[in-house]
Image (cartoon, rainbow, N blue to C red; front, side, top):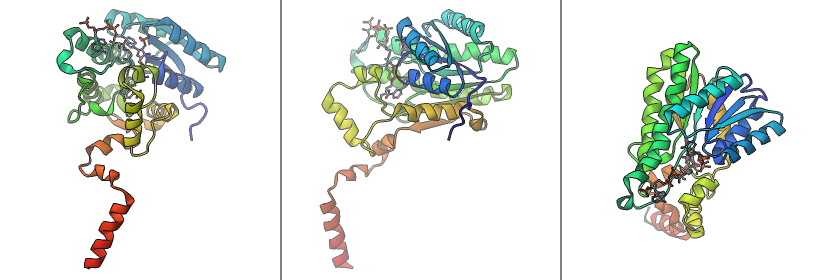
Length: 284
Ligand code: HXC
Ligand code: NAP
């Protein structure tokens, strides 16, 4: 359903583009015609992703950058412009996370995650926002959050991430209104579980826990990278010009599975349902 050149003419700055979902988005956007500028802290994965894009005939470049450092983000933005001219879109995908009992966290552990996710997203968003506003260009921001980012949800054992992602969601909705007059739109994607080295090594403590997570999932599976990359491409494209301030959940219904009071009735065997239905039929 996507035209081959859906993102042609776009230059996209994507954080955390060397690994996981960032890498998958970078490859897909480049396939759809975008020129990709990737940042992250480690050079090797960024270089490898760019090389794969080049091999497929696409355009990509990278620089190392810690998004926690505002000056480094400004320098990376300048490099991106040197490479591709004006940058049209920003994807805030870089994140840090780990599971921990909150009472054991050090202040530095909290700051490490919030610094990457919340401050890092603000740094990148403001650096490009300022440019787009002063140059009267318009722009497009896509923030990758999580389903537990919803302020009335959260999640135990990942409290720094939950706090930071909720902040990113608030930034998305706030700026969607504040910056709409500058033709800058902001949206978010809240993914459910998508297997990546980064997330799995930090958040899946064991194979049985992974199996349990899959088994509890209404679709009994995890997400496929192309499913998320295609949604992201759509939200960045002109097809989504009137979508602003939205957070699209892509989790196969996992979040709702946890929310509905009676959803655990999924555990009830067929035979129990049939017995109850037969008893009701006898009464009536
Ligand atoms: C408790 C921890 C910890 C852990 C680190 N710390 N890991 N505390 N439990 N597992 C503490 C350290 O002791 C230190 O505090 C502080 O955090 C900073 O640690 P550093 O290793 O110095 O930090 P840094 O090198 O900056 O690395 C940041 C990081 C790391 C977040 C800790 O994990 C990282 O680089 N992550 C990037 C990739 C990532 O996390 N990907 C997953 C994204 S998945 P002290 O006080 O000792 O100095 C996701 C959504 C998943 O976000 C949803 C799943 C379905
Ligand atoms: P990942 O591969 O670990 O991705 C995180 C990326 O962020 C890495 O490339 C990392 O590269 C980069 N990064 C971390 N700290 C950085 C910093 N300070 N400055 C610049 N870059 C930094 O994990 P992922 O699963 O693909 O996650 C991608 C996004 O999806 C994240 O926003 C995550 O919260 C979200 N998400 C994932 C899932 C899932 O199931 N996988 C679910 C919900 C949400 P360096 O280490 O080289 O810096």
